[in-house]
Image (cartoon, rainbow, N blue to C red; front, side, top):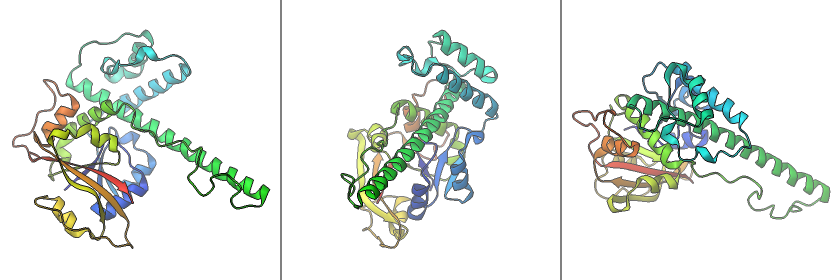
Length: 315
């Protein structure tokens, strides 16, 4: 059973290792092999995660489009960008000449008003996911730098005063560290990831049923309709000793087995919901805002059962 991590295209190494110990390898969908971060590639090489890509041969065009966006952002740093709010689908992907066309279209403030063809929508989704991963990488680096600065500040004050608790609140959490952000453009991110999942379905759906995993409560709340959601587990501890639970997850019928936790093994807390409705492909098409001409559901649907979505928390 594949465990697809969403809507992110990268995962923190410590979470990947913990998930591997508790549930097995995590599957990451990624828009582009050429843009895989070094630490993600290392996780895949060590078999902590599995990487899946849509079958495309347009790496150069997507990388050029990303470079164009970076250049445009640098030129407009500090400017009022409110005019771009809500444009979303109006920024198309233009194929081989993406870099110059995207830059020209953004600068002119004009763009397509109708939904593009399926292929263009998929390319926009891939570009959005690539830029989102880059943004989150930069934010993590900034947060790590802030942590290091505050630790150094505490050490200096303690050395000056000769006291272990010279810095107010030293025993608590770091006070100036940037809090982990919520997922920016959550709905757009989820929709883009769903389009990517549909494009790569022939690669991940061969081993159904799939378990869709996230580490963000906002994502779970976004995709779970309270009127059609059954809570199967609530902050249930899962570790490498939870063999009964892993077996139950392949066909969750009846109550889950009791927690099997060993203090010596890394564990996660798993909140698991079952979404009734159209099965995995129908669910993904709904998230993606599928239109006529989008990827068709296979016949027969190998993921026709109710969708399982889990939120994981490191314990």
